Image (cartoon, rainbow, N blue to C red; front, side, top):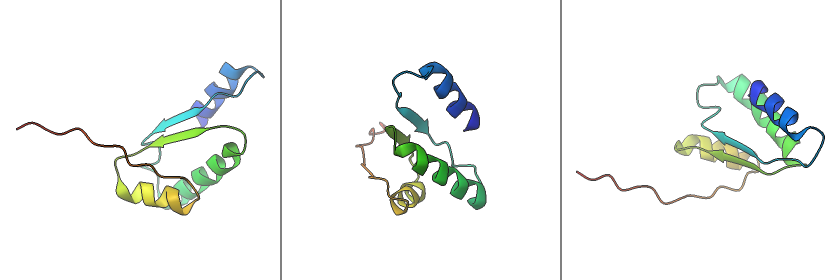
Amino acid sequence: LAFRLGLLSHLEGGGELLPLLLDETFVHFDPGRRQAAWEVLKDLFLDRQILYFTCHPSMAAEAEEKGAQVMELPGLQTRR
């Protein structure tokens, strides 16, 4: 996460703020680290759009508890 945030800051170069796209970023974090990461995102959300993708209902619920707007996208149907 720190690397991604640093890269984002570098790419912006003091110009227009870019959106932050995250896909399953916290899924392997322990609860303490995940809580700290949500706090970082909460601060960043004040200035930029953040899109966090997950297929884990528990992660979506946690994001919603932190104030995120959760949107469920239709899944792909698996052919058998």
